[in-house]
Length: 512
Image 1 (spheres, rainbow, N blue to C red):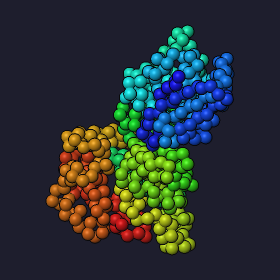
Image 2 (cartoon, rainbow, N blue to C red; image 1 turned 90 degrees about the horizontal axis):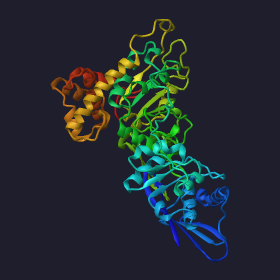
Image 3 (cartoon, helix red, strand yellow; image 1 turned 90 degrees about the vertical axis):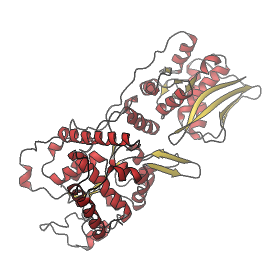
């Protein structure tokens, strides 16, 4: 007899159905797992053996073979523990095979038989629902799995609870849907009223929030660049139900979904500048989503941008354009969503005081040129808004806080985004924000009047804008018009968009 249990393997964000086959035959006692298991899967033998011993069961003295089909796909992760244990219990006639067939199982077993959390429960639940199956997962993640639909979800605390459920001794009730705890304090604690001065930078931040545009802030140390960037999430609208599901799936795969529930706030990721290329875009020995994917539909903040490794920064160019991170390895070729909003900050030079007459840089302009040349032209060309953040005078710091809060700005941002949503729905476009508009859709939504068209044509020639730079000016202009509630893009909107298309001090005003 061969016992079969349904489970899954992951290829990026895609789910691959896996059939766990358990066979017991006469012969010398042995316990082998085949089907390209990695080290974590091979070690499941000892965890399963100990968990069954905790139930008072011992493996029969037979030759036990566990096959993970399809056998030519690499199997990674500790979530195979539970399906292997269930297959053994079914082969030993402890559990009824006809009831186990209706479920997809995943979970890691502790040595005492309790179930501990694993990665990928939400995408596994979505896959099970699509196959018409129920799901068995650890109790701590049941509130995550029920968001997948009306499928039957069993979330036991231990293997014993699951056995008792199938034997009718106890009943496992359906878990309640849970929302993940917010891991970033947004508008409740981080408000724009904390930022004194920097009105032009606040305006750029509002435009970026309204249209989903990328921002680069340049200024001396202590001018408030990080302070501003960390208040951007408080200006963004909440995730829609569909967006929350997309974002939560990625964080579930990465094992960073806190509280075993669905995410409700947009992610904010701020990796240290020592982060490697694999940490930023994904990859590694066991391919995992990187920071660009963990920031999907949220904000990726890169402080001290020139200090990042050059290959890591250049690897950002493709995800910024396409909205996805494609990782090609000899053993895997996977794609993760990566539609993020880049917010970067940097000093004008290494010492940071390039334009400060009181603390003049002793190596200017060579210091600034060397420091800024760490950023390539193609990368800078993908950033919509270049903002100077000057030092705030000490006299301004003692002034009363500004009257406009993040809630006021957020209301305008939501109104602008609602206009964009209605516009894209009428055009049957999949774009969410102006920053995602491209091709004919961009031409339809950003139609310029005569003066605006003449201004943009003259600016494109004088600033030597690339085609990418030209289109990014159109997107930013459309966002500014949406904030003003204007149906058409006017000359003043284009003029403001052009003011943010500056290069850093010492660099040409051109799209490379």
